[in-house]
Image 1 (cartoon, helix red, strand yellow):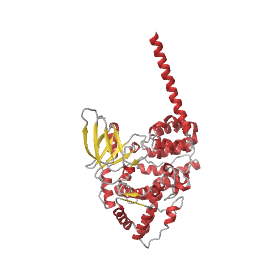
Image 2 (cartoon, helix red, strand yellow):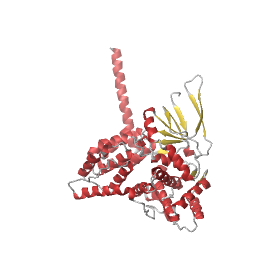
Image 3 (cartoon, helix red, strand yellow):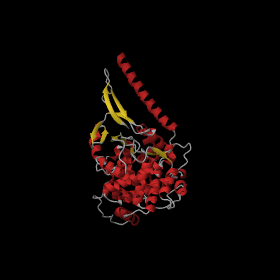
Image 4 (cartoon, one colour):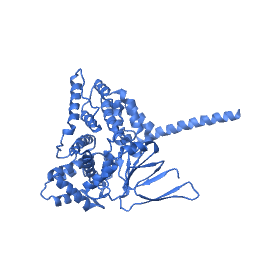
Length: 470
């Protein structure tokens, strides 16, 4: 329809008004070969705002200014990525489409048109590292692609490594990589504790398993940790040159983990690596990383103070003012608290001091909600319900539904059944599995809603008929 705009993972060639109709024809062309999973198309009431000559943002009119501001560093990310990869960006345009809130992922790296979630719109550009991740995929994933999903870590592990290299250069702090990786390692540990062992293997035998069940941070963070281990074995300068050689060698190709192993061994024949252990052993990485801690120190120290305050029942809470902290420092602080279950009074004191429950940053709100739910803080329930029913990003909604279920199973189930149609089908399926809701229960709820609607419609029709008779 002419009121709408069409965008695609390709370059727009032309638009034509179809004569005698209210329709517009959009023609696209993609000159670079891509695997089928990277073909994407979107149509809607969209507007566009340019960021640079080759970058723009598309979104619904109501969020275009916020999205353009949040992602204004896109061109800078792109230039740094080209420098790190040693190869120019081949896709010509890098545009972003800010999707509706039900989009279940942080981003999707479609060539020429990255999809992003509106949960990134924090107002301070603090969550733009997701864009850096999707930009990195332009080389690691889109240009050099895993042969099958068994080797998914080659897409995501490399991209996580590449993203952290980009962000370290943006911040002009080499140790920002370590700071970000500390949080990633904790996320990996939580995932390993939650997932079936077979899904914590870096190169898993997926068989006929539903791919959605195996999706986790393992290929991202365990993959990153293998690459970080290799970088520390051979040295950063040599490893970054190896990365450029890797991109040149496998560009426009697919590869397996064995291909990667052979290519690395060819470059560094004297470097000993227990490849089978890294590839096939379940659980955490076989070598624990030694990340530089200086950027995380203040956050971790404050976390220790709050844990001591909670354990010892001190009269005065920690006095450190975090109002000048970056969002990354705050999330690092909240991450460091997750291993401890706080007294309800401590959680209330913490919120009074820091106002976490009012944060616009989805990462902060999510982490604080997890802490409050673990402490059985029922006052947080309305906020949690609002958060999980106004956006559908699985990173947030799945863990929060599980935690909400621990506090109030009936509320968690009712909330999901009332809003299941809002979520993306993959998200809805996974939440139902997490809450152990059968498809029969979901269908029953929907039929009840349809039946109730039908009764109302019948009553209204009867009333109209009575009036007509009168």
